[in-house]
Length: 265
Ligand SMILES: NC(=O)c1ccc[n+]([C@@H]2O[C@H](COP(=O)([O-])OP(=O)(O)OC[C@H]3O[C@@H](n4cnc5c(N)ncnc54)[C@H](OP(=O)(O)O)[C@@H]3O)[C@@H](O)[C@H]2O)c1
Image 1 (spheres, rainbow, N blue to C red):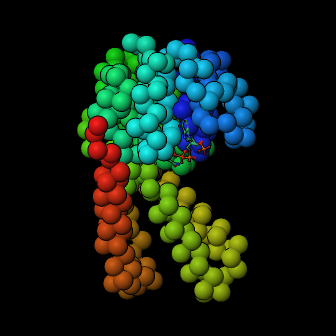
Image 2: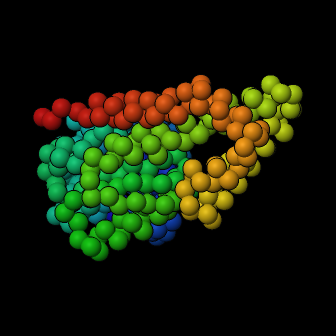
């Protein structure tokens, strides 16, 4: 088993970690422009380094973790690495399977959308595949589990939707946490106390939700006493357009994800 990760960036690091978890002893190479970062990742994950595809040789897995704008240039150069059974896994936002197939002249493809918590094995990766055997699908699933939860979907269109919901999602949550912490500070709480209250509230609420899978709305009704403090707060959030603002933001991210799709050559 030989694998190459094309793009030794943030996602390249995350995917290197997942690869090592699944395959502690198999051969891995980082392909990308020479940099201190490439060297550091290669050291961290006991991998080789290469600047040009011709230095790599044939591989079983090609993992594409570079910016989508680079796809058109790089894909044809990677054809020489592929054998009929090689598997290509791309996390590039906005690059469809059809584009990958045309660029690589290769059918065995996986398109995945991970998110940042994958860096500590707590992410969610939505993925779609084509021309894979059941055994290959199981292998991919095992690999992606190194990033946290994984969800296989049949519809490729769901990938752009996942980009806007779970791919971008951590940023919504961080913004919410920041705003809630500031609200605590505004009342007079020291920042470190406000931060701790916010983090533990979020963590506890998610765990509680997972233990009581009756839906977020019912759980919220249970903590909203008539005329109470929660009802007062929720009233003001709704009045300020919290729900439509979130919905519009996710829709805008989805439209942006769709617009990233390159025109097919
Ligand atoms: N970050 C996330 O949370 C996340 C989540 C889901 C999907 N993604 C997807 O993951 C991909 C990578 O994102 P990222 O955040 O990891 O970006 P990044 O940190 O900028 O990484 C891109 C890497 O590709 C390298 N590179 C540039 N040109 C190359 C070439 N011709 N051949 C090989 N490598 C090349 C860059 O090297 P230099 O820096 O030296 O140019 C850099 O190391 C994107 O397509 C993005 O849509 C990212």
